Every structure is written in structure tokens, then in C-alpha cells.
Length: 80
Image 1: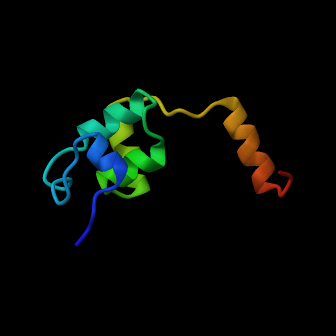
Image 2: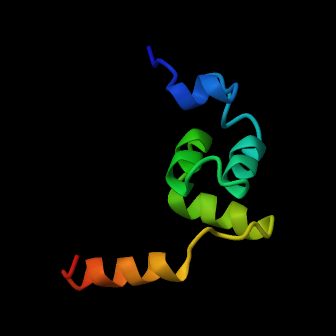
């Protein structure tokens, strides 16, 4: 038996119903910066690439700043 996470209960998601519908709530919560990409994607129960595709189809802007990019570059280069 799978128990819902605090995010699932907080935002009204119920186990077993994600694949039966479009992940509109998850996209909206990501767009409003309530949930991170990873949390919204996990709640939608889709792969990273499926979620990226959904964001693109709905023209949702990703939350990725110049600072995020610099941090990722430092991390990739081993200079945290």
C-alpha cells in the first residue's frame, strides 16, 4: 500500500489517479513556483522528459536563472 506524501495530501492528489488525467495541477503549481520541477514531476508520475515535453507544449517557462546555471557549471567542474 502506498501512502501519500505531504504534498499529495496538501494539494488534493489521490493515489492511483494521476495517469487517468492530464497533470494540470502539477504544471500550475510548478508555474507558480509552489513546487520545484522535481516535486511537480514526481507528483505527476511522469519521467523528466515527459514533464519537459508537457511544459513545452503548454509554453510554461522553466525556472532556471543565471545563478542556477553558474552553480551547475561549478558543480560539473568539481568546484563547489
